[in-house]
Image (spheres, rainbow, N blue to C red):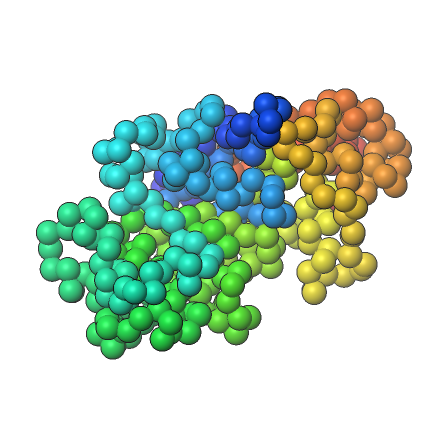
Length: 336
């Protein structure tokens, strides 16, 4: 029997890079700078990190909405190509759910038309009304007919997000890429939408890549976590590995500010560096509390932190970390 960790990936990125032209002829901004990532069938992967770290650009590159500068995206074993026809076919199978349901929905379109739009674009020939009703029902809007003629401004924030999810479900995709799917919702509604995503995975076998800055959300919904900083994934593993035994100082800092965290929060100084001017060595070193406190020096890796790139993490399911200090501690048998 094939386990989840052994199952072939549904979605893969290999050596993925996205660079945007620099301002006034300057160096290009390396928004995604060598990413290896897999999402397996039925798996939920949380992609976490601060704003500006490249998460949304990576998500759009994985969906073909941004063309990579280098590297390859593969879906169900086939490389993604960028012809209009190929992308049209791909987007039936991989759907994007955006964070702002108000901005995602046309205020002049009824709920019915918003959900049916994808069917019409892709030339659906079945019973449109029944298909729209089924998608709304799966998204938790029941009875669906009650919502057909309503407009987005007549709905609550949670209901609008359910309409957006129904619009994604209507094409029966295999993968959802959800970019901050609950960031704009009240706390009381967030749990409902997360429970919906988990139910869709259980009922439909949907895989999902959930982009978020919230590690608490990752704990509640994901199987695996990939932590991103300045265009790179710096730590990856199962939820339990990354969130209960974090090894990268960046992951530790993100976790320290959660309400349930023990001890004082770790305050990172400054903003992430400009992706057009990525520093030598570890890209986190200018903000690293471990380096600043002399812990990297005591571990004998401070010079490596300043001069040697920790490298690009592989796509496998095993726990990995791009940090000289964390690797030195592991080699010495230190606990996480």
